[in-house]
Length: 186
Image 1 (cartoon, rainbow, N blue to C red):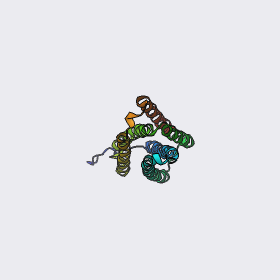
Image 2 (spheres, rainbow, N blue to C red; image 1 turned 90 degrees about the vertical axis):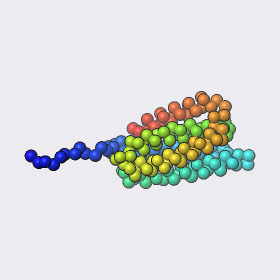
Image 3 (cartoon, rainbow, N blue to C red; image 1 turned 60 degrees about the horizontal axis):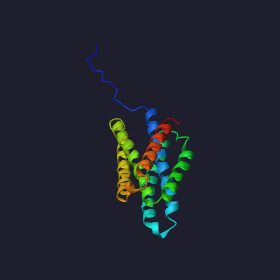
């Protein structure tokens, strides 16, 4: 018998789990871009809402960078995107338009609710992947910081002062969480 100690394999995250993570994150960034486009479609029409339109355009640019990174990761890791993409596109754009039509504070409430769910989601993934996928974990940590900045700006701009904020926030939060669960598998 050999004196060589057998070490257990390094704990890792399965390829299937990585696929779920990338599929969900790709869909989330896709949805975020659609939300910001929907909101800008409303706010860019009036000089009175030029400031929020500029804020939304900046956030959309950051989300687009995240989406581009996930597009590359899906190809690199041979992961298919969700079949729900067309639905998430329509739902995201529609959510953006509806919340913008409700006013600036409602649009910010939408951002605050979505970004809160997403930053928590990224935080969980950073922890899950830190040992077995440190590069991916670091990427998600950076994206999480961007989402936190979006959320914080939305709060500063009055998200929690939106009419019906508790209900609006709860509905959007529940929708995001449901979309995550659906997208993991489909």
